[in-house]
Image (cartoon, rainbow, N blue to C red):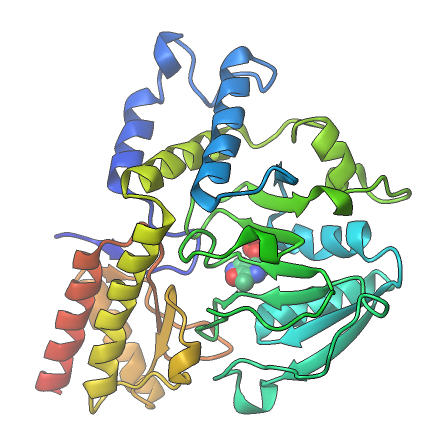
Length: 358
Ligand code: PMP
């Protein structure tokens, strides 16, 4: 039975990448040593990390005045690192409350003594559409505006970035990093763990404009951008395996034709599912059409017991991990970069059959 994994992250990886890892695991490049064993101070790893950085630059067209850094600690680590490094002038940030992860980012900044001004929220609407604010923003007031480009749990995405005046835009791209194209120049900083669209759990990518990287005192070294720039992301032992595996996924993304092609495929994949859901008399996706995510598609029968039955029957058919986040309930299909179109088609066929037999 072909198994398709719709998990929200860690998530499915490209088959050729899994096979390459398997083939290379006992002996990397004929050295007789595994990637699991090699030193981060070796020439071989230097090549791996620098190639990965360059491939990120190529894929996202990262301008020269931006650094590409690797951290540990996930998106959650960056909820602390970003305010610690960037909210140093006014100690005040703006936030668009688009869901669970935006709220978490705001809470962590507040926890660190930063004033968090929520410009708009769609909480009352269960985050089924994106918040927008037309209040003009000024850098005289805020260190940055935090925006969650894709809301993993709620299933919305900013395909067009919000207005931010002259205020630095910080993007949490955790769940649509390289799944759709953004212009890096529009952001001061982008971050996200790789475990959804780009690799296994363990490494977090940060892309930051160089004028924002300043020496900051009294913050943990492990979250210090200026130190990580100086040390080529190897201030301490980096997650060697995760960076290697991410490097393989980046090569695979290049082979697929780069991000324009990847976004096109992701649009086709998600349309396949949304079109079915919009026609269905049993299943519904409640998200405002223009705000729908390409990577996370929540849906429901509106009957919790029936939703459970669908999840169980799907898993019996090899369609795994379709349970929605506990805060939303229902089902959620995550359609990240490595989910093949055939997987989405198999899901649509299954749901269609379920509905017919219901
Ligand atoms: N932001 C978003 C949008 C996420 O989806 C997640 C994880 N699901 C996080 C932040 C937290 O990331 P991590 O688990 O890597 O700390």
